[in-house]
Image 1 (cartoon, rainbow, N blue to C red):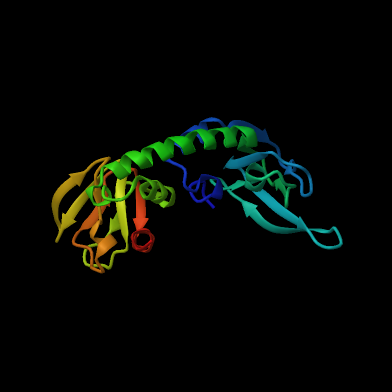
Image 2: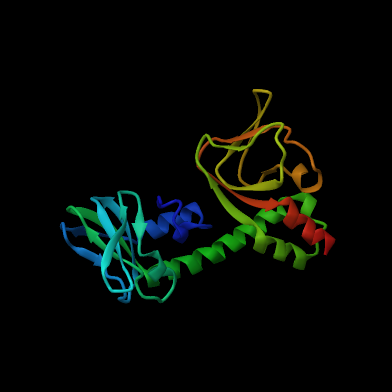
Length: 231
């Protein structure tokens, strides 16, 4: 999996991901080097920049067999960073290469710091939506807890005109273009929102919404929103 798809980076903001990557240290390796060993304690996560790495697991008799490879852009060792657990596989370098290493304590400290930052931005985002102002403060706070931070590349289509919609979005960072029948209507910036009709109506989308640049949004699904109002 690519770094963006790795479980360590799920739900992290662009700023948090950048900070995590900046905290990583380079490691040069030679062919045959064992990077992590199955059964040993581990505290580091690695991303491959150069080289090829083979993944081995032991069977019931303790015999190793190859179960996969790691290529540039992929990572391994994330379980040790997320939990205090033993390595579940062995990874060896097939060729000389370069890795980037991240320590568990650094990752956890950054995650805690940026989680608080995200919660603050969620509160700001919720204040920007008139539709949500009638909600009691406690309900609004709980709604913020279930909002999902989503990241979109530049030029990515978030919603498509005339397709069914079941999500509402508040822009956190970046910008999007609203297009109706091929015509650009407006550009939305952080603090604005779109797709709100999907929260209260079982209707199709009235426009295309396409990102201009790398954009992050907080999203709320219709099912989650209805649960709050019904309760």
